[in-house]
Length: 156
Image (cartoon, rainbow, N blue to C red):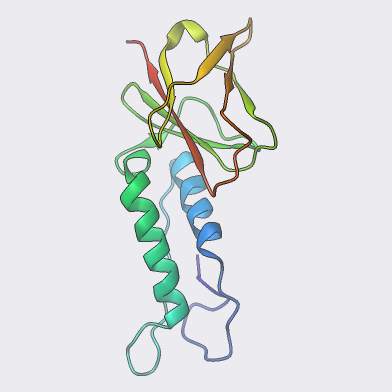
């Protein structure tokens, strides 16, 4: 993807995507077993545009905190939905909530497979309620961040 509307540097192209949009695009790619190539076109003097540097810095800071949920993962056992995607490494499933207007999330996952459910940030445990077709996770509040991540440890 491009950070703005062109693959190379164009002095008049100031339509840069927000850092949040770039993070969401990267998370969506990871949750779909993809990779993301972010194009940055240097200025004629070889320096990167300030706007690009700011976005790369924000992406790097997000990855510093949340990179474990992306690096070395594959798309999770729950396919992508309108609310977001999942990534997975071994028995750890990361639920990336990108668009949810409620404080509860239904996952088509047998509760018998779940060992533990907690927020990735802060590691506070979350309540999950089983049903015949899956489990509902109760969040502490309606997600308002760029990516609210729930960490689910699955039983072997």
